[in-house]
Length: 70
Image 1 (cartoon, rainbow, N blue to C red):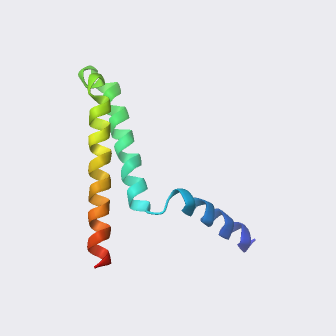
Image 2: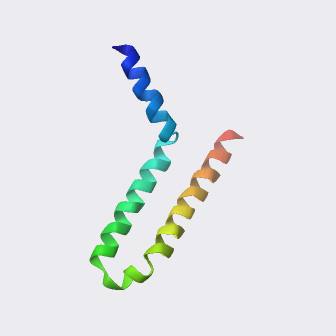
């Protein structure tokens, strides 16, 4: 039974190496999805806002990792 847990954790590790990054991306996607559904004017800008948010999340995560590795 322990080998099943090990296989599942290895598979999850292939897709989610950094849990905080994955969580931030999921939260951002949910917020954008809610905002676009709620506000009509945002639908024109959804791609730009989505990209900007994901880029900021990636930059912040990279900066935090670089600080931690020093």
